Length: 138
Image (cartoon, rainbow, N blue to C red):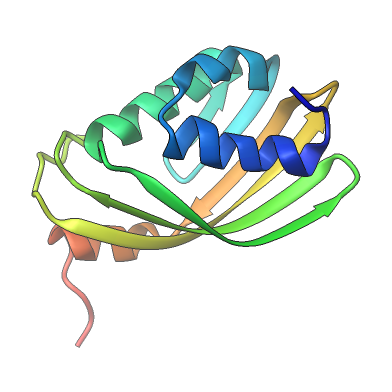
C-alpha cells in the first residue's frame, strides 16, 4: 500500500466503500483516529467499522462517485455523490426500498499512511426527503 495521502483517500472511497472491502479498515485507520460525521463522533478502526456497517447495511448497493479531489500535504478533501437503495435500518428508519443520491464532502488527515482524522458532511436533509421521512418545502 502506498503512503501517498491522495491515493490513500481514493483507496478508502474505491476499495473500502465501492468494492466493499471492510478488511482494509484496520490498515487504513489509525488506532487513535477521530471520525466526525453528521451522526456523531467515532474513534479508531472500530468507529470506522461502525460507520461502514451502518451505511452498507442500510444501503447494500452503496456507491460513491468522486466529483473532485483536492490534496495538500497530509490533507485530502473529496467531494462526492453517494448513491444507494435503502434496504436496511438506518438510525431507526426501516427500509423504504427508495433510491437516494446525496452530495457530500469528506476531509481526511493522514499520518504515517493512516487516517488520523476524518470529517464528513453530507446533505442529510435531502437524504431524508428522498427516503420520504421528511417532506420538502413548497
